[in-house]
Length: 362
Image 1: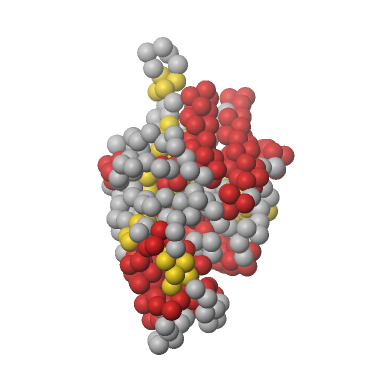
Image 2: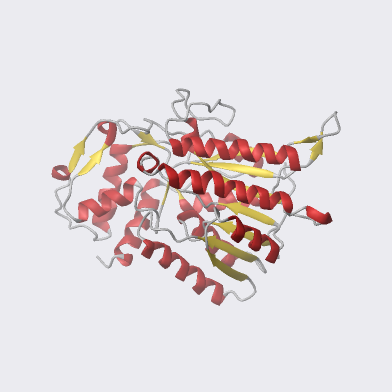
């Protein structure tokens, strides 16, 4: 079992702090962990509606104002800006770094590849370099680097469920290739500089205040406008939908358990490096998912009870870069942390529908 490093009184850097997972993690830590000091960085880019990021930031500020025993410091900037990252690490002595800043989305990587190279490769390299130099001049340096990977690294793998022991050398999108690169870069830095690092392969994260480019959010927007929603691969897709609170709980547990630093027989460090899947371990059929979403949108009065869903659905072929199924083998996560996501799809989509009604004042 991993040794535990409690989060109380720790100074933690969270990149992508106004992103979907980042903001949820920040809010949870400020609410629940006594004396935690959080520095958040986010470039507030307009990949999707900035109002959602601003709403998340406002919620964080409200919580920070209430929980005065914890502290919150926000930096509006990009991790791809080396000067900013250098300054942040000079001004704060971090115990834990959680890198969630990334250009997300498979489809966007086809039309805007530059954004992925900048954020996911150059940005992550800047974080690794800063972690490396946190040990300079005898400083204690960071205890743990936790970073977001993605289920997309499994690419065209046929074996189901996806296991962390599978080979992941067949990315089918640039996004997936950058995430696999993050794992390789982290491994190299763990080996060379003995930096404890853990990569987390997230599986289709959803929930309130999520990303509008995700299917459930996009479907809702379109249905509300009376547009047709396209269901890819004629509905023969399965996704391991994971509710955001379950992701946050998993991240918090992992943060507290850095891989142990050990030397091998050659006297050199064995890389203190690990990767885990965080998914629901229960893939849902896309058509069932759409049915539950419809029911919950009707229940929350986002859509009228007599809405004709059938006339607004179109079954279409597969998109480039997409895969037919995502399914996480979460055995290692359960073994090491006694944790398994448990929020049902209906419960998660209900909370999303209620948030959507309030946020957009439908």
